[in-house]
Image: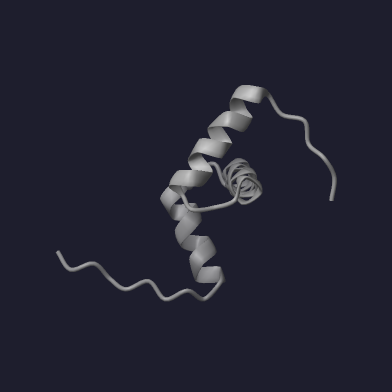
Length: 67
């Protein structure tokens, strides 16, 4: 593990987002980095597709939403 230098405004945005998403600042930054890496590797997938695939890979059962 190392230290990553980021812009102060980005750090503030991460801090604010982490509060909304109930994550630590580090967990929020890691989530954004992972999703960004997956988005670059899979440019045809949407954010929702990426999250759905990650949940499936972790074998998380997502119930269907009734219409």
